[in-house]
Amino acid sequence: MAESAALAADNSCAHVEPSRPHAAATAAPVPAASFHTLLETIDPSTITYTSQDLENPKPEVSHPHTQRILDQAAALLKDGQVVGMPTETVYGLASNALDSVAAQRIFKAKNRPQDNPLIVHVSSLQMLRSILKDNTIPEVYTDLIRTYWPGPLTLLFPRSSLIPNEITCGQPMVAVRFPSHPITRALISTTGLPLAAPSANSSGKPSPTLASHVMDDLQGKIPMIIDGGQCSFGIESTVVDGLRVPPAILRPGGVTYEQIRQVKGMETVQVYKKHFTDAAMEQAPTTPGMKYRHYSPEAEVVLVEYVGGAGSGAGSSQATTGQYSAITKEIDRLKQEGKTRFGILRTSFDSALQSNSSLQADGVIEFPLGQRSKPEDVARELFRGLRFLDSQHVDCIFVEGISEDDEGLAVMNRLRKAASRTISSDTTEFL
Image (cartoon, rainbow, N blue to C red; front, side, top):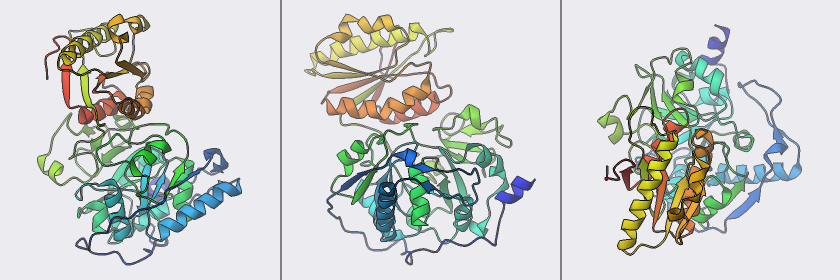
């Protein structure tokens, strides 16, 4: 009960004050801007947290270069600008979450639809309370927060009036995450403000997991990018609405369905699009990733699902054989249409299949995602693989589907959004 009380309302905590009054939802559009984009590198190991306390943790920065970059980025954010930053999930495009004009700069730089909400990132529970209605953390989230924060988990809360309509697209709920990446946490703490941050890519493209991906999409459109290396999870956070009955996973991500349902109060959690649908929610989403097609490179993406009998699921060698056969047949068909370059995101089960002569022919480029028995590895490499194959100017990218267990649920969610079409590995008929 003590921990529940600690997460409940603490009306003595200081409010985070906005750096400027936020404008109404009908504010004049922000004009396009041009920048010489600065790329600065921080070694994440130069930032540490010695305390497990989440109330108001403070970073310890061991190198002056790191502090200089954090201060420089914080100054831009306080001035209403946007900054590309690493997180443990994907690179984010951050702005002051309390400033409506700054939020508009995110939408402008990404060419993001105006009805696609943003996730707010905080660095302490004190900061979280300050942006919630009645400064109160709902008790239903106590165990989720204790177990998976900081981390790749986003929760929905009733918002306070401090959060501009631009962040939530007019919805009464705000999506909030407490990230675990030391650079993200330290930047939020240095800025002293909650940061809104969708993925730092052009809207609809594969999410960035390297700073170079952010440069590819947003160079000249934003003033600064912090390079913190490759993101460890490689896919976006899981989004949970624990205030709904039953609780719902609105977007699968770095914390799995299997993990969440083990948490007290989450035993009956359902997954959107798997266990239920809600047309009204899709038209007026409370969280990103529900309404629009995402994660798509320039090349056509073809998802190769496995469809088979009992004992022949997407983790078996039979599945891999069937998927390779389907890809080979489809490549032959596309060659007859004049297409010549093909990419394959491979999740090999049987290494012997790597010598398949048909797939080693000229014009076929493979990118290994990792073993399908380790979906966390596939998740980490997925967006990097899509971007790499797109950079090779292939006409079509084939992706082998995997089991939806554990992180595989998030992987398949992203692939179904990225794919132009799906073929079945037992018949190669279009699905």
